[in-house]
Length: 221
Image (cartoon, rainbow, N blue to C red; front, top):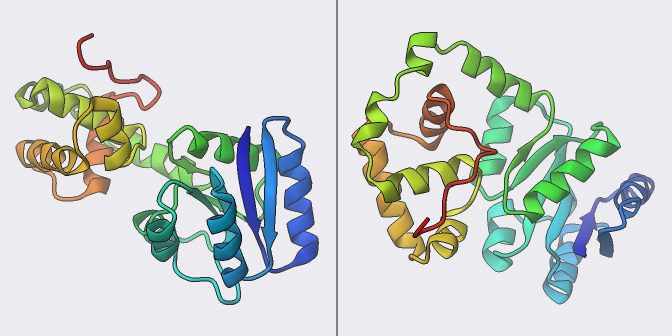
């Protein structure tokens, strides 16, 4: 059962989201909040798997603050803003998914399910923009696997899991290494590939055909 806390200041909108979420047998809304302080209190008390929250709410602390206090709870952000800068900032501060508030019910369900499994999720139009960016990469670059040959087996594992949306802590748990070691491997592989940002790393991976839906093998396989 996926435990969810719902934070939205408009009670009618909140009720609509609750109906959507509870239409899934595997979802359980264990608490609702109308302001930020109440959201923090409920999440602290219930330890949900997922917090579905509106980006702008009275008294709501920043996403980074919430993640710091409750690192195990994944955050799905619902917002009216569709500019890339706002999306990037939300993800950088710890959101696992970003959707427009007018998103379809099925999209919200998919996002909650994805983040509960440790993946990231972008709703339309953001995912479409990522695909368009991929298609703009010249075909000769998409087919070039050369730079990947410079990576060690462990660096390839870290690259694959990063593309799949896992955090450093999650990757460390899967590979039985520390989050600090994961970050060191990521830094090394980015240096070898001549990349200087997480966004550049993601674009590189997609351009080389590294599939987010194709899991990296576990150690020893």
